[in-house]
Amino acid sequence: MGQLSFFSAQIDQPAYEDLSGLLAAHGQAVRSDGGTRISVVVAQRWRADALVEEMSATGVDAEVVISDEGNPIARTQPCHDLDDLHRRWSSGAVKAMPSGWVPSPRALRLWTLAAGERDGDRFMLGLDSHAPDTHPALATALMRVGVAPTLVGRGLSHALRIAGKRRLGHLLEYIGDPPAVPDAAVHWPHVDGL
Image (cartoon, rainbow, N blue to C red; front, side, top):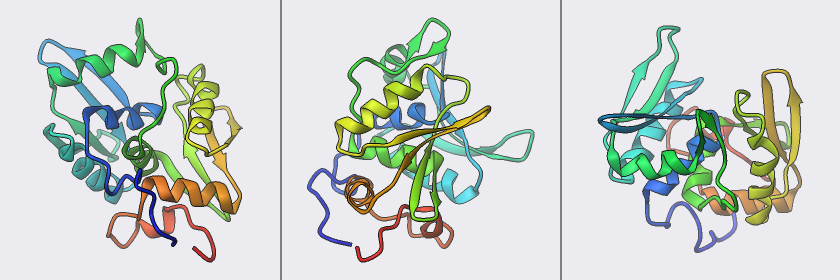
């Protein structure tokens, strides 16, 4: 891979706002008296472990738990520091992307960890099937960072497809290397020759 951009997730300072990448995917923010909890159910344990590490880097306590269905869940502890993020990503009881949102490199990395999947020579960033109104806005948000996706899917499976060496290379500059665990690299974006 070429030299990483200075905006890369690997050198960007962690912040609560990074957790917005989980909300761009299928993550949920739930507000209670104890504060806001952000959680995301993932398909593989390595994803949950990597997400908890990234969440913890922002300064919130996080853990992996297992759902009743046996799926790993990466989640923060309830925290009032996340209340503003919940407010900005909610419209009543519905998830809504904030107007003009631009994903930081670390937010894009969390989105990739939670819902990214290699698809041959393309890459898919999963979307929340329960928040279809966010899909076009999230495609626009990716365009703002120079990664022009195509919205694909139907039914309960929607994603933003990223294709082409230049776009994939730019995505990799943003999100950095995969976590150093055996299963991560096969799911991470890849560009031949980089």
